[in-house]
Length: 547
Image (cartoon, rainbow, N blue to C red; front, side):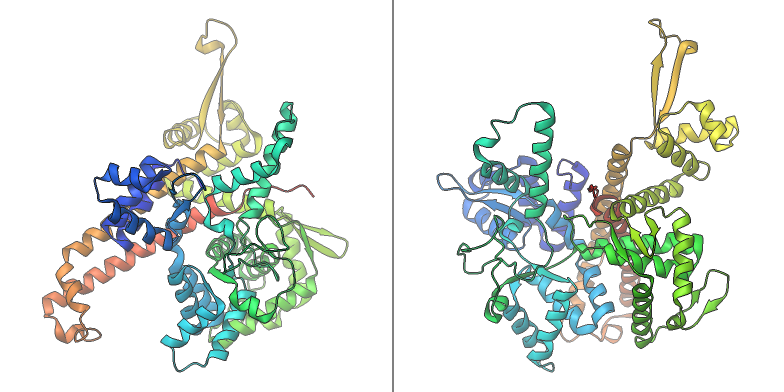
């Protein structure tokens, strides 16, 4: 995550103010302005008593919105955790996903885990059982184990409580004198890449059978440098491991929905189901470690589709699917291996080039799939702002690189006037840029080559900045609407009014409340839609792996 983004800092401050109050918001905002600092420096800057600042920082650290670092011979310093603050927006989505996959009990467990931030298995079971006395502890425990297996709950490591820069610095320090002996540009680049990969592995949130964070604060006697014990665990040790909700599941869901929407437009709903089922094979609910190219059999994919269809039908959903020829199948369990094979063949022809068929197996390149989803999301954002032929021009520039206007006109089969208007509008919005290459020192226009090009990383940052700004304004608008009927909202929180608002409130006041709830639902829906774009453009892994 780009911590230097001013719009992201403003958004995170707005989130904290909306969820946790003005005092926490003031502390966090000052932390984003000062960077890493101590409690004394923060108190002097805010002109607030040191005791109040320490209490506020303790609350932010408990909520995992701020990192703290304590050294042996120095003061404790604090750093704003922008990623942790932004993830607050995704808690509702994660609870809804758990409800869709495992039912209402799973949703309550995930909601409790999100409120606790991290806890042991025993603490989680105890907390849920206290609020749900009708369900016995063995059922809750079984559901927690199912959520761990499905990676809705993951292990907490000590490195998850540290800033990325601190983990990076610790890894470099562990290499010792070997760093000083590195000479040459190539060797330094390889060393930086190695440190980056080790940092990502240290922050790896994947669930392993024997990896856990020691709750007693003792160092493991046998394990790796990240604090993950590799010795077999007893049942008591598994009960004492710290668990945390895996909010990266929301990112995976957004990616799968992007693939589903794209495949439905081009090949129909059956092919979309097949593509998503195949993509889930290589999709790992882990934001740091990229998955390799993985092969799978058509028969196993067909079984997966049958299981998913049975699950949907058991939920009471009427599944209607297209077989690719315009006809519909009411029962997905009737999908044959031949239909799955035909769907994969059509998908592999294009534009889903990350699917390949070799001999008897099918292969999916996870990094190529992630890149395709990000590009499609970028095209969707562009289409919402400029109609055709802008997306066509962008695709040509992404595939061919820098091109002259005349070449663009020939490749895109476009008129000169339409092309020029589209190029100027795309440049104004920041999607493309222009490079001048003079042929002589006089730099005369008729002796200069003008090349249009697309810088994907810069455009992606530019689009994200715009999305952050839009989300901030939506949250501010929601806060404004809430302020307008503050007295009514305080009234409906009373025990004698809850669930009986229509009779307790006057007709005019109830109409105002109904309007506010509609506006609130609309604003939250827009924020969730924008968060899906952020999940795809920013949080889908961009690391490529050599196989």
